[in-house]
Image (tube, rainbow, N blue to C red):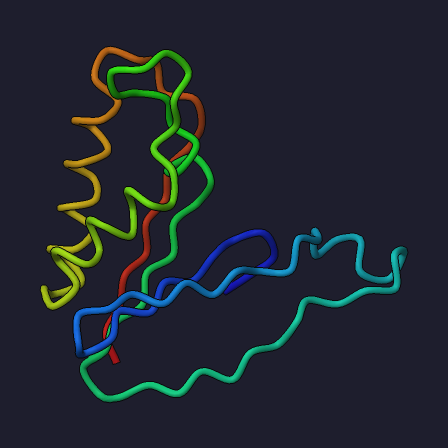
Length: 117
């Protein structure tokens, strides 16, 4: 997906596979002599992919103090809406994040990209 950004693969069987990124910034590749790991992803027509920025998963909310949205919650929502159109997936994620955030202040920018192949 990208440096420090996970990719979520929405499979036709309803499962979600998370591809974790290489934890390096793209601007430091030459200096550190490292490159992001490349993955070849096999997919079927109709499957989807989702990318969210860390502002999404790091957002504080819920009933506990200083408790972030996290990846488990994100994957659970994706499993529920994984067969929907990309626009509906982003809408569902946005609604769930707003509900989670409640009265907490937004900590960071939030970006969600969803697409189907």
